[in-house]
Image 1 (cartoon, helix red, strand yellow):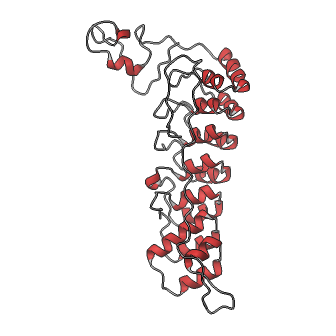
Image 2 (tube, one colour):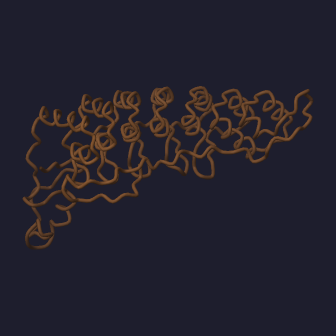
Image 3 (cartoon, rainbow, N blue to C red):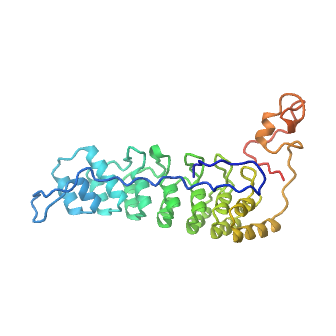
Length: 315
């Protein structure tokens, strides 16, 4: 969701590259040691704790833990491996032996986020019951809810929402789980988030709402869900409306849907901004000085003080 592309402020007809889905999937931790035949008192060869948890060998994992030869770091690393592979039994064994339910990788991915990425509701339940913070994000700043939405893990998303995860918790670029689900076209996730009160008009750091991203990505089903929930088809991001964004990428069905929604939508209230000023940011920059507001200076401070958090739409 973070952008590496340029966002032209030119006319809506100017094609542009859609923003990449730049949330790098949390790297699955790998076992540090390859399995080696080792007699652990059982007829079959056993593996070290890391390998046992990465392959789901719960019996071996429990045996190793019972020996009391593993330290806290080893248990935490094994927990990350078990979560990333969705091995519920190993997760339960590790938590029972003192592994930290809020363990994170060096790159920042938390155990909860890894379980959400794997789509393992069982691992999520074990972690949450063990004391994992539902909104813990680690250094990656991606909560488990965001990761579940990005990957289309509707079951995990539902579980996290029922555990009262913060529905609009921001990622690094200010986008929410609804942004991630809408852009990727995970319609069921979009429905769940909207049903739990996710903000439809929340903007990321570049002004994009979930509808803008869904329209630009050609996600027709997600666009319809968002419109039905009350998302504004006239909200402009970087000077481009959802309709212009979909048109620029050749998504004709999405464009037609948005065109119909715009026709049915009530007209926007007149903008309180001075003539020639296109945005609140520009208005704020030009309220002190002298000259023409549209040229970047004004003869004084206007009496219209916009309230904080209010959106001003201009035609």
